[in-house]
Image (cartoon, rainbow, N blue to C red; front, side, top):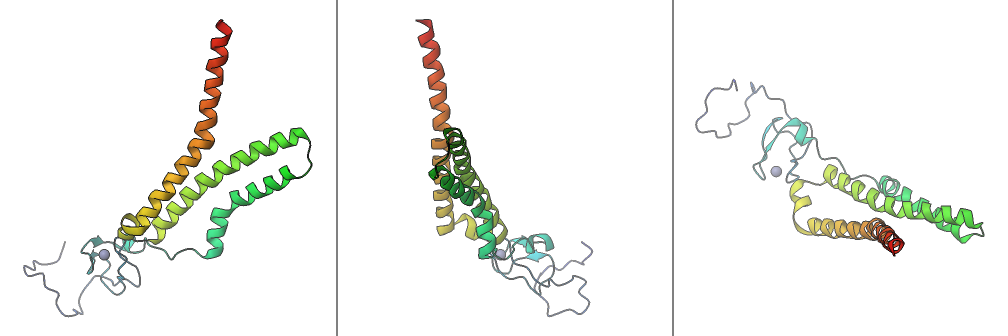
Length: 174
Ligand SMILES: [Zn+2]
């Protein structure tokens, strides 16, 4: 720091020779307080946490409804398409293939939703709102649902498959 010592540290009225550039926009990444017009680094006047130009520009506006639909919707669209194919009178070979694709899509919906929502929250919500209160509760619920779906659709068949193998090999010994 090239600044001279300032023991009081009190905010002096606007100094024309202040070398620090002002932020044209930006918010505190912790509490969401607008930092527009403040020096490009310092402490948030609202929560006292330090900010830099990078951290101030971290928070982006919430994505548009169309963007959210696209980000969350592609595996759901695939799943519905597969269900339509399965409902139609296809041969057994394709039915089997359709079931496998449908199964993959359910797992994709889960994993995709988890990471898309996670990245949207990270991009657009201040940390304080993300990690406390109702958003934190909903995140926990969402994570739990994702884990349950993955356990059922990935863990379940895996355990079933291993169980079958064990059973078959033990029967083979008799
Ligand atoms: Zn703040």
